[in-house]
Image 1 (cartoon, rainbow, N blue to C red):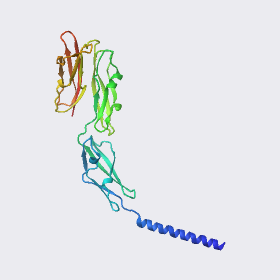
Image 2 (image 1 turned 135 degrees about the vertical axis):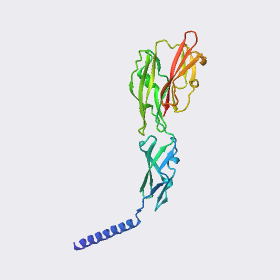
Image 3 (image 1 turned 90 degrees about the vertical axis):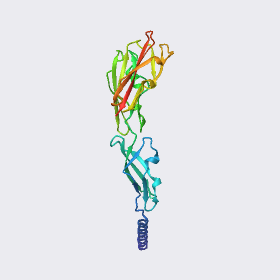
Image 4 (image 1 turned 180 degrees about the vertical axis):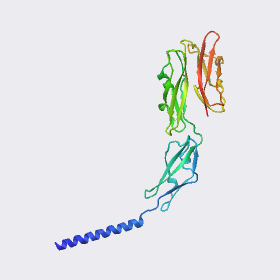
Length: 275
């Protein structure tokens, strides 16, 4: 029995010594350096259609054990906007011991503007011919960073009565993933029944301009049809524009057509001048 106890003690001491030796070896060989990412600029300016190469431009990464790790840098997610078009992005790089190094850098999108609304067709209807759901089907939104935001468009207010002729509006909002919200009040026109015996087709129903840009209404006249769908000469189309390209706001261009035989048609295009 004494021999057994002695053997157990000896084995325990040897195991303890081996464990201690392994800890010493581990501590001596342990990688205590953490990779460091550095940037040669405080703010990175990139276009909205940036490439991955542009996103990591000006960055270097170094680790005392592994050396240069610049090619291993990975960009993470963007933060929400701090100011319009300005946010932060966090970068990370791992060394051979799987230890991370991180850096957060400010990014400015040089050509960014808030999301635009889109229209696939006019917001002009005859009495009883339109509806709230029809208007929503024609609405969309596009963002330079997120792309299509049509599913995120919400109507916050409207006074439209689709059974009675008149001029109405619908108030819209859309927000992108960076927290930037666009809002607009778009006009809706309800015409008297059978008052539109000619159809004016435009290439766009909603146009954005930067302040100072000019617009030529004639450029958007696509086609003119009679009540049976036959094509007519677009020279019969005239227009009246209220657009002030120097002043940001929402405007309309009113298009009319007449064949001199009592048949007429009208429609509107909305123009938004950005700040």
